[in-house]
Length: 132
Image (cartoon, rainbow, N blue to C red):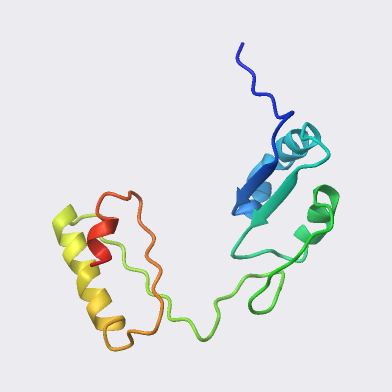
């Protein structure tokens, strides 16, 4: 049996924490955090943190600090100042998808070089090529 000791863990980072709880991992998170030393620092990140998660966060966070952009609601919504573009290209080859992504970046980013772009990909295979 293999075990991991958390006795010396100093920093714990949970990304998309609210999704973990909604997927049924709340008891697991509670169990893990109960094994942490008293001096640990727990950081929880999420693009959406519904009001219903506030109570859970107060159970496991000590002296929490909240950084929030926008408005917290029970139902997540997109910021009206952000253009969200979703294009599914599963049937295309890797090169075709890559060329389409570059085309979209030229269309939506090149005219506005000070704007930021976030691209979500399944693999980091060619991410560095996109930076050029």
